[in-house]
Length: 61
Image (cartoon, rainbow, N blue to C red; front, side, top):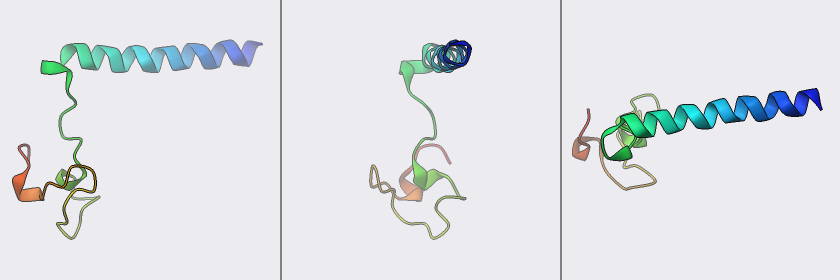
């Protein structure tokens, strides 16, 4: 039971932290989540697998 309560508390802290970040950001959007903007994930300059944007088409470089 003790581990269950600790797990619930830690999950609650995580959800609370994400909620604070969404509340503080303009329009509630995470910045720079497109994989094509991350040079560690996109070494060959390919299009993002999720949104299809190329690195040169991204807003935040």
